[in-house]
Amino acid sequence: MTPWRQSWANEVRGSTFFALWFGLLSAGGTMAGNLQAWREDLLKRLRELCSHDGRVPRLIAEELVARSAWWEGHPAGPVRAPRHAERIDGDERSWFVEFGANSFLVAAAVRDCCQRIRQWVREQQALPVSAKSWERLAGELHVIVRGSIANYRGDTYSGYGRGAQGKLVFGTQAVYVNDFVSGLAAYLKTPELQAFQGRAAGMAAPREKRRAKAPSKPGRAICPQCQCEVSASKLDSHIKKRCPKRTTVQIFAAKAKQRSKQIVKPIPPLQLGPGMVICPRCKGVVRAENLKKHLGYVCQNRKKRSVSVLPVAKEATTSDKHQLQSPHGDDEAVCPWCGARMKKLRLARHQAKRCPKRPQSTSNTK
Image 1 (cartoon, rainbow, N blue to C red):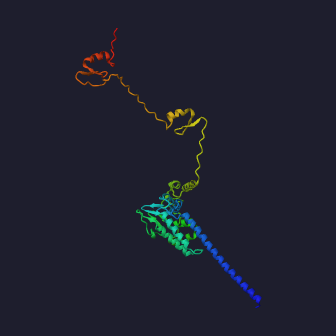
Image 2 (image 1 turned 180 degrees about the vertical axis):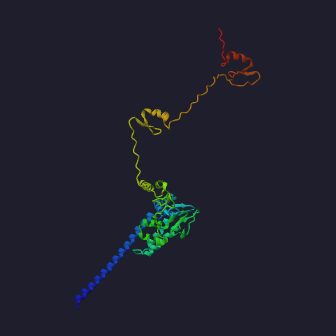
Image 3 (image 1 turned 90 degrees about the vertical axis):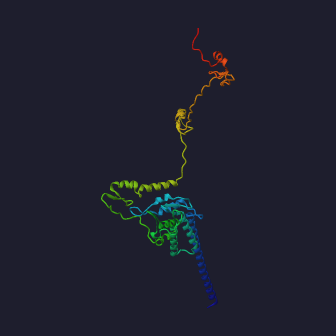
């Protein structure tokens, strides 16, 4: 081989090796960047679901309970019981729902699940995550939810309802662990976690729609919404008022949720017509010419008139220093008309001429 051909071959080999090395380096950098972006995105959703100090928003707690609560003792079989979300008590760090003597600790379940997911995210080293890792995480979350039940003394169970096939049964009510974890996965936008819930819980999700059954007795009918057997004559009343799945309840819930999101508008100022004024006491609208009468007799906040008691006329008093005094000795007497004290010898003369309260004579002398 000539020298120029040898040099040309060496240059080609060097450029090819450099291209391969640069391609592998850039691919590794891209994979590391994708993994970091995936971690940051998932950790951000976890902060929205539960903060680092353990605060869970009430809206999230209500949505998870409404999604996972079921009525096991319903005549038509297990049906959803979303109204249990209205019975949530506590605060952002201690949301719970009472089911008889036991309580489902919603905030504790969400907080412990989010803490485990944060640790799991930091343990991942490459994308895509293996199916076994997702399955292992789903099983750990189910164990955490089962341990979030407390008795009447506040003691938690190590694993409540292990033999209930993915349910936390409380009498006729139950909480489905699959639905609870599915709600967490929906908030985190991780469909891979939802794919392994049935395998981790050992059961499939319950079916909401069941086959229509025939009435057991003549004169009975089956409600088309809740599949409950009622009297045929009361079917319309049941559908309109008593059916748990009636349309009016769903419409009312949707309207209530929509109203809660609306901004409260301020009340416009009151515009009065001609000749109308506002009462300064009860803030009612009255006519201007009737305002005085309204304030005196009609207004609810009018001043109540106090009943005036006429003072009792006092008896005329004299300037005598010894008035209304009792005698000191046997030779003294007191005038029964004016109460003056004097000697007994002067009493008759005093009563005849000097007493200011002596009775006037009724006889007229001419």
